[in-house]
Length: 189
Image 1 (cartoon, rainbow, N blue to C red):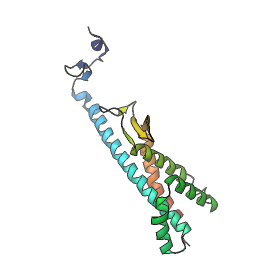
Image 2 (tube, helix red, strand yellow):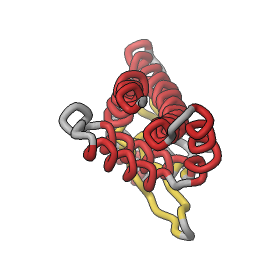
Image 3 (tube, rainbow, N blue to C red):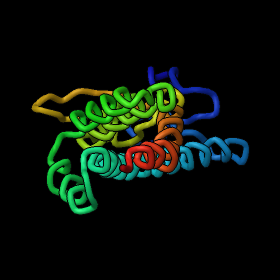
Image 4 (cartoon, helix red, strand yellow):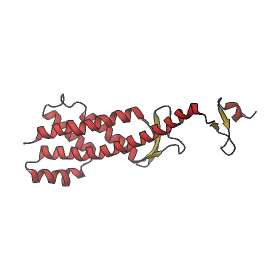
């Protein structure tokens, strides 16, 4: 018996032309597992795209909140938000936001805003410069996805935990819809 045949799990068979990889036999009992993997992958891709959209929105909202804080009137707020702060790197804007929250004594009211936005920004950068690490399946180790990234001349592999993405997405949506709105309201002259 060949080594590949010895390694095959019960309920699998080796198919010709598959590179002697084990292939699961189809039966109604494992249909749920097959569909579950497909739907989890589709849901994960959807959440990743939603996370990237939220990251773009968050960058604009942080600029707007800072412009409100720094501007004296509607015209200066508009200029600061679109012309000036739009060119400031996101990590610098988050530092300004953190300083503003601290200077106003609002740190206890908004403890997770800046750390969550930093994590969102970091993940957004990783995803923007990444691709699937394995073209056949990016899903390994349960709910951990492996991706490769090419960033600043270096290629590395990183892992994304699906639960972390779902949690970060919910937190970021709350920050955008509640916390940053409240910070902007409090910042109005």
